[in-house]
Image (tube, rainbow, N blue to C red):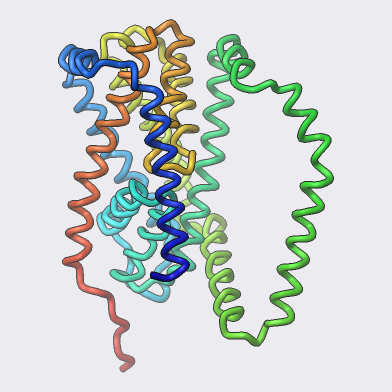
Amino acid sequence: MTKKLVKKIIQVTVSLGIAIWIFWFLYKDIAFDSLLAQIKESNWAWIIFSLSISVLGYLIRSWRWTLLIHAEQGKKVTTIRAYHALMVGYLVNMLLPRAGEVARCGVLTRTNGISLGYLFGTVILERIVDLFFLVATIFLAFIVERKLFLNLASQLVDIEKLGQTLGSHLPIILGVLILSAMALWLILKKFKAHGFVNKLKNFLKEIVSGLKRVGQLSNPVGFWVSSIVLWTIYFLTMYTISLGIPSTANLSSGEILLVMVMGSIGMVAPVQGGIGTFHALVAFILIQLGIAEIDGKIFAAIIHGTQVILVLVAGLISWIIVLKTPTWTKPEPL
């Protein structure tokens, strides 16, 4: 067993262990009968409708991804093919946090012959755009529920103390970043003739090429409109499922927006599928909204559990389809 594999196993084990511990800590005092009763009382028509909206969101995300992929070197990527690659990526993320981003690029490299580095650049660009929309959503939540937002923020973070800490450590942080950049530049310059360095430089160039796609879009309107629709779908997914659960059915759209923001932050954490972190943050904000602690935790478990089942089923189907898809081969020159 190689050192790299051992390191990866340790990382996965630690990440999964943290996720399971957080989940156990949250739910250790909740009887299974309470969860079962809530599931039986829920309106599953709303929950199934919520899952249908999620599938639509996956398809829109897949179509948006195709707008970033310019297949000069391989076969044009269809929305369906991008969807299967995306779902395989989500499936891999359930085991290896963030590895799904590389996995979905690897699928299209295999089936469409497009450079892995270039595809990874488009995924990084996607994540940057999503981060922008997450920040915009947080700002929208602040506008809609300003008083509640500030109250929650003060409970989670001491903003004044955080500002002082960042201010006092800013020179050190900037110094480390500058020295790291200089060290990397010197290493690349000294070993520029080395094969590994050349491969690394070419890979970085491909990533930059993928990142540049945002300024070279053939359908910029479609890209930005689909991004807005995508985040609207995230909200509708949360809103419709809240209507199906008795304890949250009376929450306002602004309050659900805050729940969505906290859930999105929980999913960003480097643990498998947001397990534990999603539940903790969603339950926390629901408790602040006046929902009983048990009901808040059960709501988080239901919405996360149904989404996980959807990803597992759809991801496995896509994985089987990808395995049956022939590997792309470069056509022979005439």
